[in-house]
Amino acid sequence: MIDPPSFFQDVSKKKSFDINQDHSDLIRRALKLMVPGSLVFFSTNHQRFVPRLQGLPVKDLKEITPATIPEDYRNRTIHRCWQMTA
Image (cartoon, rainbow, N blue to C red):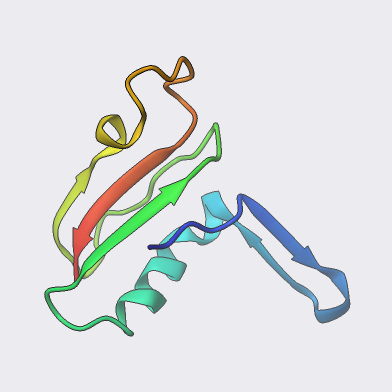
């Protein structure tokens, strides 16, 4: 399960993470650790998330957002979620 923060910054280490810029690289790095055939889930709560998932070395990439939001939950844009096979 990959569920990163929308944004992170550590000024002292000069490191940052922005979900819209860095999610593809994060997923690629995580996939290197996975056994081929493993299920990987990627989720984000960023309200203006722009997915850039093309070209990832995965099989069966599909967005499963509707199945991950409870039926009685009013805010249908609370998050987005994808399932992929390493």
